[in-house]
Image 1 (cartoon, rainbow, N blue to C red):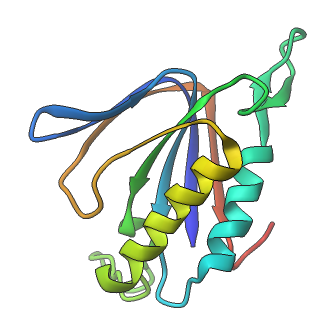
Image 2 (spheres, rainbow, N blue to C red):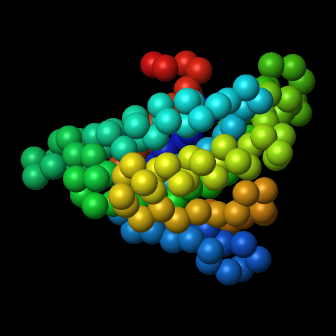
Length: 150
């Protein structure tokens, strides 16, 4: 399971020109689910996501977690995080999980993030054609992979 986190001061997601989710200060989290991912992958990423100290303290140092600033999450499904560009010019998505596997794990990720963080969690719609707008604050962008815990 892979996530791409962007710290934001505001973000929204539209489907057919209608805003379906929006936040102010917090994280936009793009979530990609792989064939062999399980709830343990989601649990590890959620724990790390909640604890990341990426928000500035009174001295301007990134030292505060999203919970400490009472921030919000905007979660967006994105199978393209598992693109392989090894061969040719057209990416392969063979490692991305099928919707039958991915949707329950995506829903689990959202549910558990709400429970464990106790913060506002907005979402797009899995598999929809979405238009995501955000202001990347910093810019701060972090990549995490549950199979490559760096």
